Amino acid sequence: MAAAASAAIVACPTLNAAAQTKVDGFALNQLEPAPAGDAFFGVPSAGVGGHLVPRAYVMFDYAHRPLRYHTATGETPIVASQGFLRVDASLALWDRLQISVDMPFAIVQSGQDPNVAGVDFHPPTSAAAGDLRLGLRGRLAGGDRHPIQLGLGGYLFVPTGSTAGYDGEGAVRGAFQALLGGRVGSDVGFVWSAAGGVELRGATQAHQLVFGGGAALTLGGDTFQIGPELYGATDLGGQPLTAGTSGIKAISQTHLELLGGARLRVLGGLMFGAAAGPGLSSAAGTPEFRAIGTLGWSPAAPKEKAAVVVVVGDRDEDGIKDDIDACPDVKGELQSDPAKDGCPPADRDGDKVLDVDDACPTLAGLPSVDATKNGCPKDTDDDGVFDPVDACPNEKGVASQDPKKNGCPGDRDADGILDAADACPDVPGPKSAEASVNGCPDDPDGDGIKGAKDACPNEKGKADPDPKQNGCPRLVRVDQDEIATREQIQFKINGRSRGETISPVSSDLMKEIGDVITQHPEITRIEVQGHTDDSGKDDYNLILSQERAETVRKWLIDAGIPGDKLVAKGYGYTKPVADNRIRQGRQANRRVVFVILERKK
Image 1 (cartoon, rainbow, N blue to C red):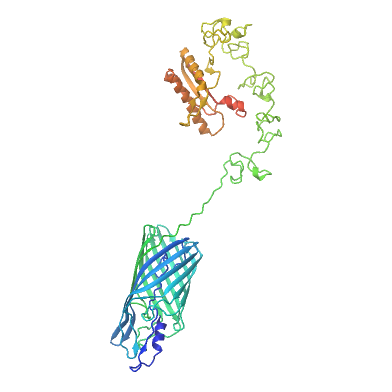
Image 2: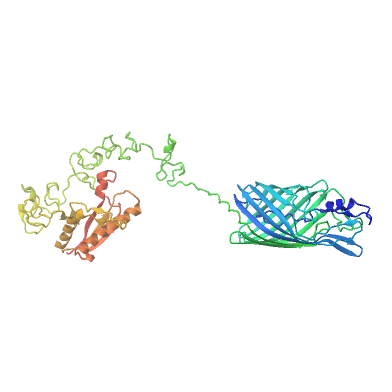
């Protein structure tokens, strides 16, 4: 600004009372405040911060004695005070661009004419508008909260101010700057900005090199900020005004000011700010000191989302990562079809029935139109025990842990009569032509129905006109170690919990179980066992089997069986009685079993 004053004074080197020369005014205020949302008062930032994020503030900027006339006897402040009220707003776009507008109004102005013969300095005495400033900024590199950011910015000044009151330039001017900055830390952090560029002025004023820098400590995220900033400008051309030639105290062409400032952000974006500091040079427009106060809305830019680092595991430890493993929970190998990578070989048992269709994928078998038998070994007697492990492949039998008896008809009481023909398979007895008493003693169950008349000689029953039911319980039999049922207890989900209740279709069966327990007082302790097949997760099956066992126990207690006689225990699928690989086996494994734990001796 010294060149502006110089142009006004030097144009009239010979001054006398006969010719009164009016000194043209110029934009005296050297503070160009940073757009709304920036970290500092006078140094613009390199960042932008957000998309469609509006920010604004009202600033009062007071400069004390920015233009002084010097004589041998003292100084006269041509501009003793100048206070601007500024309205500034900005809008962030795409986290890359920022547009801004700043409109200053000089509301406090005063000064004195130094009464230099032949020169009219016209000191300001009334309020006036300043030059409207339009801004555009682009962020080139570095995120809003990165330690290093790079940007470019520019201003266009519209001559809306008054030259008469040192409020405006009277001509269009522009400024271009390179911007650096950044921030580090979160709760306690550090923010910095630096700027440098040129301001291109009208033909009557010297162009300027403009510069500035600031650093501040932040606390509580962006809640509070405090730190210094330094900014200024140097005329490019022209001569400095000196006391010897004009009386204007302007012995430097470099304007320089220092500010110490603080800002407080509350309620997410309400911003209070204050700064003050001295002028450090004697250039025209440099005040003895400056004070600033701001009130605005400036929400912090949205924090960048942290990059999500996905660690790809290998759950089945087959060397093929889960993200490309089509069977991540089963060890496998690379396949010719990438969609099957990580899966077991397509035909593990080599029986030419693909595993996807093989009901017995680990046992070599034969193709079958029955999906439950496809790929399984032959079962000639259809007893569910495959021929390779069936000790009696041509006779229907039962599964046994003894390989010599597996798949063979049973003879539990070892009386020489196979269980299939033995009417009392658990009590030794003689052969009889009468099938109903074959292998039975005279009255083994003690129900009063003897010999051939007892259709169920090993189980207490009641007399029945039907010879086939005489002396038999209809649904329940008592074995040596178990109270066996002819039917499985059926359950239904009642919607109140994951626990299940007994279906009404099993009411008769449950009543008969209760009657049999009552009729056998020698049985003192019974374990009510719940079992499932292997479908589903281990924990779920264990809980489900326990709930079923407890439901049956409660039903029997409510029916009058002493509670201390019954123990409920769920085993999940840990004790199968049939092969879970076939449908019939899974159905057989879903059961409730009554195991006799103790008898009176």
